[in-house]
Length: 289
Image (cartoon, rainbow, N blue to C red; front, side):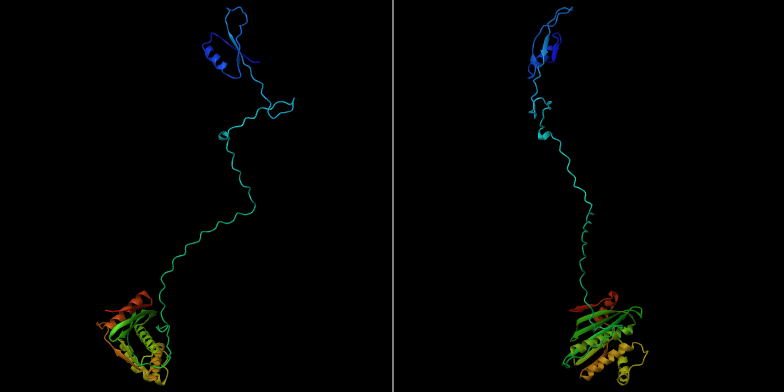
Protein backbone atom coordinates (compact mmCIF):
# COMPACT_ATOMS: atom_id res chain seq x y z
CA UNK A 1 0.00 0.00 0.00
CA UNK A 2 1.61 3.34 -0.96
CA UNK A 3 2.36 5.74 1.85
CA UNK A 4 2.87 9.48 1.91
CA UNK A 5 4.71 11.06 4.83
CA UNK A 6 3.91 14.68 5.57
CA UNK A 7 6.15 16.98 7.55
CA UNK A 8 4.24 18.87 10.20
CA UNK A 9 6.68 21.75 9.96
CA UNK A 10 5.96 22.13 6.24
CA UNK A 11 3.97 25.37 5.63
CA UNK A 12 1.70 23.51 3.22
CA UNK A 13 0.95 20.78 5.77
CA UNK A 14 -2.55 21.94 6.65
CA UNK A 15 -3.55 22.49 3.01
CA UNK A 16 -2.26 19.12 1.89
CA UNK A 17 -3.91 17.36 4.81
CA UNK A 18 -7.27 18.96 3.97
CA UNK A 19 -6.94 18.08 0.32
CA UNK A 20 -6.06 14.44 1.01
CA UNK A 21 -8.83 13.99 3.55
CA UNK A 22 -11.45 14.91 0.95
CA UNK A 23 -10.12 12.51 -1.69
CA UNK A 24 -12.39 9.44 -1.91
CA UNK A 25 -9.51 7.05 -2.42
CA UNK A 26 -7.27 8.28 0.41
CA UNK A 27 -7.41 7.38 4.07
CA UNK A 28 -5.44 9.60 6.41
CA UNK A 29 -3.82 7.77 9.33
CA UNK A 30 -1.74 9.61 11.93
CA UNK A 31 1.30 7.71 13.09
CA UNK A 32 4.26 8.57 15.24
CA UNK A 33 7.45 9.04 13.39
CA UNK A 34 10.14 6.47 14.11
CA UNK A 35 12.70 7.33 16.82
CA UNK A 36 15.89 8.84 15.62
CA UNK A 37 18.84 10.73 16.92
CA UNK A 38 17.23 13.97 15.91
CA UNK A 39 14.92 15.78 18.31
CA UNK A 40 11.56 14.12 18.36
CA UNK A 41 8.88 15.63 16.18
CA UNK A 42 5.39 14.62 15.39
CA UNK A 43 4.69 13.81 11.75
CA UNK A 44 1.56 12.70 10.02
CA UNK A 45 1.79 9.73 7.78
CA UNK A 46 -0.97 9.71 5.14
CA UNK A 47 -1.64 6.27 3.85
CA UNK A 48 -3.09 6.36 0.38
CA UNK A 49 -5.48 3.49 -0.06
CA UNK A 50 -6.14 2.83 -3.68
CA UNK A 51 -9.27 0.78 -4.24
CA UNK A 52 -8.85 -2.35 -6.27
CA UNK A 53 -10.04 -1.71 -9.80
CA UNK A 54 -12.97 -3.80 -10.75
CA UNK A 55 -12.65 -6.10 -13.68
CA UNK A 56 -14.19 -4.90 -16.86
CA UNK A 57 -15.35 -7.33 -19.52
CA UNK A 58 -13.27 -10.14 -17.92
CA UNK A 59 -15.53 -12.72 -16.28
CA UNK A 60 -12.89 -15.44 -16.33
CA UNK A 61 -10.79 -15.56 -13.10
CA UNK A 62 -7.06 -15.74 -13.43
CA UNK A 63 -6.98 -13.84 -16.73
CA UNK A 64 -4.90 -10.65 -16.64
CA UNK A 65 -6.95 -7.56 -16.02
CA UNK A 66 -7.86 -5.27 -18.85
CA UNK A 67 -7.91 -1.59 -18.22
CA UNK A 68 -11.30 -0.08 -17.69
CA UNK A 69 -12.80 1.36 -20.84
CA UNK A 70 -13.60 5.02 -20.52
CA UNK A 71 -16.40 6.25 -22.73
CA UNK A 72 -15.61 9.69 -24.00
CA UNK A 73 -18.55 12.05 -24.31
CA UNK A 74 -19.70 12.64 -27.82
CA UNK A 75 -18.66 16.26 -27.74
CA UNK A 76 -15.07 15.21 -26.98
CA UNK A 77 -14.81 12.61 -29.70
CA UNK A 78 -12.70 13.52 -32.71
CA UNK A 79 -14.64 13.71 -35.95
CA UNK A 80 -13.56 10.85 -38.19
CA UNK A 81 -12.34 11.90 -41.61
CA UNK A 82 -14.86 11.55 -44.42
CA UNK A 83 -14.39 8.38 -46.41
CA UNK A 84 -13.30 9.10 -49.95
CA UNK A 85 -15.21 7.46 -52.77
CA UNK A 86 -13.37 4.58 -54.44
CA UNK A 87 -11.73 5.53 -57.66
CA UNK A 88 -13.26 4.13 -60.79
CA UNK A 89 -11.25 2.94 -63.69
CA UNK A 90 -13.92 4.16 -66.11
CA UNK A 91 -13.16 7.55 -67.71
CA UNK A 92 -15.06 10.43 -66.20
CA UNK A 93 -17.78 11.85 -68.44
CA UNK A 94 -16.88 14.94 -70.38
CA UNK A 95 -18.28 18.13 -68.91
CA UNK A 96 -21.48 19.21 -70.50
CA UNK A 97 -20.89 22.27 -72.59
CA UNK A 98 -23.11 25.22 -71.81
CA UNK A 99 -25.40 25.85 -74.73
CA UNK A 100 -24.44 28.95 -76.59
CA UNK A 101 -26.97 31.70 -76.66
CA UNK A 102 -28.28 32.10 -80.12
CA UNK A 103 -28.47 35.63 -81.35
CA UNK A 104 -31.88 36.96 -81.89
CA UNK A 105 -32.78 36.96 -85.56
CA UNK A 106 -32.75 40.35 -87.17
CA UNK A 107 -35.91 41.79 -88.61
CA UNK A 108 -36.40 40.20 -92.03
CA UNK A 109 -35.92 42.43 -95.03
CA UNK A 110 -38.61 42.25 -97.70
CA UNK A 111 -37.42 40.42 -100.80
CA UNK A 112 -37.49 42.20 -104.11
CA UNK A 113 -40.30 40.92 -106.38
CA UNK A 114 -39.13 39.16 -109.54
CA UNK A 115 -40.91 41.61 -111.80
CA UNK A 116 -38.66 44.43 -110.57
CA UNK A 117 -35.85 43.80 -113.02
CA UNK A 118 -32.18 44.70 -113.07
CA UNK A 119 -29.70 44.61 -115.96
CA UNK A 120 -28.55 41.16 -114.81
CA UNK A 121 -32.00 39.78 -113.89
CA UNK A 122 -34.57 40.56 -116.57
CA UNK A 123 -38.10 39.24 -116.19
CA UNK A 124 -41.10 39.56 -118.51
CA UNK A 125 -44.51 39.26 -116.86
CA UNK A 126 -47.04 37.17 -118.77
CA UNK A 127 -50.51 38.57 -119.27
CA UNK A 128 -53.19 36.47 -117.56
CA UNK A 129 -56.82 37.23 -118.32
CA UNK A 130 -58.45 39.96 -120.32
CA UNK A 131 -57.47 43.61 -120.23
CA UNK A 132 -59.62 45.60 -117.81
CA UNK A 133 -60.83 49.16 -118.11
CA UNK A 134 -58.20 50.55 -115.82
CA UNK A 135 -55.93 53.55 -116.14
CA UNK A 136 -52.45 53.30 -114.68
CA UNK A 137 -49.93 56.14 -114.43
CA UNK A 138 -46.37 55.24 -113.39
CA UNK A 139 -43.29 57.43 -112.85
CA UNK A 140 -39.84 55.90 -113.21
CA UNK A 141 -36.25 56.96 -112.66
CA UNK A 142 -32.77 55.46 -112.54
CA UNK A 143 -29.68 56.44 -110.57
CA UNK A 144 -26.04 55.62 -111.17
CA UNK A 145 -22.95 56.60 -109.21
CA UNK A 146 -19.93 56.71 -111.50
CA UNK A 147 -21.74 55.75 -114.73
CA UNK A 148 -20.89 52.91 -114.78
CA UNK A 149 -21.12 52.24 -111.06
CA UNK A 150 -23.65 51.16 -108.44
CA UNK A 151 -27.19 51.69 -109.69
CA UNK A 152 -30.65 52.03 -108.20
CA UNK A 153 -34.14 52.18 -109.70
CA UNK A 154 -37.33 53.91 -108.61
CA UNK A 155 -40.96 53.24 -109.54
CA UNK A 156 -43.91 55.36 -108.34
CA UNK A 157 -47.60 54.48 -108.70
CA UNK A 158 -49.84 57.53 -108.99
CA UNK A 159 -53.42 57.92 -107.88
CA UNK A 160 -54.72 60.78 -109.95
CA UNK A 161 -51.69 63.04 -110.02
CA UNK A 162 -50.41 62.17 -106.53
CA UNK A 163 -47.81 59.53 -105.65
CA UNK A 164 -49.43 56.63 -103.79
CA UNK A 165 -46.75 53.90 -103.72
CA UNK A 166 -42.98 54.09 -104.23
CA UNK A 167 -40.65 51.15 -104.83
CA UNK A 168 -36.86 51.30 -104.93
CA UNK A 169 -34.31 48.57 -105.55
CA UNK A 170 -30.62 48.16 -106.31
CA UNK A 171 -29.08 46.42 -109.28
CA UNK A 172 -25.37 46.00 -108.73
CA UNK A 173 -23.30 48.03 -111.18
CA UNK A 174 -24.27 49.51 -114.52
CA UNK A 175 -24.82 52.68 -116.45
CA UNK A 176 -27.48 55.33 -115.95
CA UNK A 177 -29.20 54.25 -119.20
CA UNK A 178 -29.37 50.65 -117.94
CA UNK A 179 -30.93 51.88 -114.69
CA UNK A 180 -33.52 53.95 -116.56
CA UNK A 181 -34.46 51.00 -118.81
CA UNK A 182 -34.69 48.61 -115.83
CA UNK A 183 -37.19 50.94 -114.15
CA UNK A 184 -39.33 51.20 -117.30
CA UNK A 185 -39.36 47.41 -117.89
CA UNK A 186 -40.46 46.96 -114.27
CA UNK A 187 -43.27 49.49 -114.81
CA UNK A 188 -44.50 47.52 -117.83
CA UNK A 189 -44.41 44.31 -115.77
CA UNK A 190 -46.63 45.95 -113.14
CA UNK A 191 -49.03 47.19 -115.83
CA UNK A 192 -49.21 43.66 -117.25
CA UNK A 193 -49.90 42.21 -113.81
CA UNK A 194 -52.72 44.69 -113.20
CA UNK A 195 -54.06 44.18 -116.75
CA UNK A 196 -54.46 47.93 -117.23
CA UNK A 197 -55.97 49.20 -120.47
CA UNK A 198 -54.55 52.74 -120.46
CA UNK A 199 -50.91 52.93 -119.39
CA UNK A 200 -48.79 56.07 -119.08
CA UNK A 201 -45.14 55.94 -118.10
CA UNK A 202 -43.47 59.17 -117.06
CA UNK A 203 -39.69 59.40 -117.28
CA UNK A 204 -37.09 62.15 -117.42
CA UNK A 205 -34.91 60.05 -119.77
CA UNK A 206 -34.95 61.17 -123.38
CA UNK A 207 -32.88 58.07 -124.11
CA UNK A 208 -35.91 55.93 -123.26
CA UNK A 209 -38.58 58.06 -124.94
CA UNK A 210 -36.66 58.45 -128.22
CA UNK A 211 -35.43 54.86 -128.13
CA UNK A 212 -38.99 53.44 -128.01
CA UNK A 213 -39.93 55.43 -131.11
CA UNK A 214 -36.76 54.34 -132.89
CA UNK A 215 -36.50 50.68 -131.95
CA UNK A 216 -40.16 49.67 -131.85
CA UNK A 217 -40.55 49.59 -135.65
CA UNK A 218 -37.30 47.62 -136.09
CA UNK A 219 -38.22 45.19 -133.34
CA UNK A 220 -41.57 44.50 -135.03
CA UNK A 221 -39.72 43.22 -138.13
CA UNK A 222 -36.63 41.55 -136.72
CA UNK A 223 -34.61 41.01 -133.56
CA UNK A 224 -32.46 43.86 -132.42
CA UNK A 225 -28.90 43.68 -133.64
CA UNK A 226 -26.26 41.93 -131.61
CA UNK A 227 -23.86 44.14 -129.69
CA UNK A 228 -26.19 47.13 -129.29
CA UNK A 229 -26.00 48.68 -125.78
CA UNK A 230 -28.59 47.28 -123.37
CA UNK A 231 -29.98 44.96 -126.04
CA UNK A 232 -31.61 42.55 -123.53
CA UNK A 233 -33.35 45.35 -121.68
CA UNK A 234 -34.62 46.92 -124.90
CA UNK A 235 -35.90 43.57 -126.09
CA UNK A 236 -37.84 42.98 -122.86
CA UNK A 237 -39.32 46.51 -122.98
CA UNK A 238 -40.48 46.16 -126.56
CA UNK A 239 -41.87 42.64 -126.00
CA UNK A 240 -44.00 43.76 -123.06
CA UNK A 241 -45.24 46.84 -124.95
CA UNK A 242 -46.18 44.77 -127.97
CA UNK A 243 -48.07 42.18 -125.89
CA UNK A 244 -50.13 44.79 -124.06
CA UNK A 245 -51.00 46.57 -127.31
CA UNK A 246 -51.94 43.29 -128.98
CA UNK A 247 -54.56 42.72 -126.29
CA UNK A 248 -56.05 46.19 -126.71
CA UNK A 249 -54.06 48.31 -124.23
CA UNK A 250 -52.52 51.64 -125.05
CA UNK A 251 -48.96 52.34 -123.85
CA UNK A 252 -47.55 55.87 -123.94
CA UNK A 253 -44.24 57.31 -122.76
CA UNK A 254 -44.18 60.87 -121.52
CA UNK A 255 -41.03 62.86 -120.97
CA UNK A 256 -41.08 64.97 -117.79
CA UNK A 257 -38.46 67.47 -116.59
CA UNK A 258 -36.06 65.94 -114.14
CA UNK A 259 -35.16 67.53 -110.80
CA UNK A 260 -37.40 70.55 -111.35
CA UNK A 261 -39.97 70.04 -108.64
CA UNK A 262 -42.37 67.64 -110.36
CA UNK A 263 -43.40 65.53 -107.36
CA UNK A 264 -43.78 62.05 -108.96
CA UNK A 265 -40.36 62.38 -110.59
CA UNK A 266 -38.81 63.73 -107.38
CA UNK A 267 -40.17 60.78 -105.37
CA UNK A 268 -38.94 58.27 -107.99
CA UNK A 269 -35.49 59.87 -108.02
CA UNK A 270 -35.29 60.02 -104.22
CA UNK A 271 -36.13 56.36 -103.65
CA UNK A 272 -33.84 55.26 -106.50
CA UNK A 273 -30.90 57.10 -104.94
CA UNK A 274 -31.75 55.73 -101.50
CA UNK A 275 -31.91 52.15 -102.79
CA UNK A 276 -28.60 52.60 -104.64
CA UNK A 277 -26.84 53.87 -101.54
CA UNK A 278 -28.27 51.16 -99.27
CA UNK A 279 -28.16 48.46 -101.98
CA UNK A 280 -31.51 47.09 -100.87
CA UNK A 281 -35.19 46.87 -101.75
CA UNK A 282 -37.40 49.65 -100.40
CA UNK A 283 -41.14 50.15 -100.27
CA UNK A 284 -42.87 53.35 -99.18
CA UNK A 285 -46.57 54.12 -99.02
CA UNK A 286 -48.70 57.05 -97.95
CA UNK A 287 -48.45 60.75 -98.48
CA UNK A 288 -45.41 62.13 -100.29
CA UNK A 289 -44.16 65.68 -100.34
